[in-house]
Image (cartoon, one colour):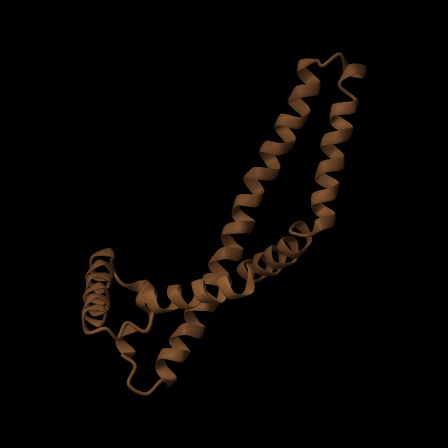
Length: 144
């Protein structure tokens, strides 16, 4: 119940606070604060207002941003898991890879590095160098 309420609040807040309007309001607040400086003789209280406000907003935004990133990452992992599951010949043990221990991830990383190097030696590296060369030719031809 509480997690659902927070999820909805975080989603709506991230949509609202991530908008151009929210950025504009933040700039407006800073401008108003700056313009009022002479009226308050740049006092400690005047400085404390902006410092306290930005600290509170930053503290709360950390949790909202982290929640949004966690949800996005989980959705991306689930989509990739579905692709792995659906592809014939794909290694299904790579599903839920993000739940492995760091040592297991390092081992898999080394395994994929060996596969990449082997493909380069055989001259059938379908990734890296070929894509880079193709992108370079494309950008040279189009003046990008």
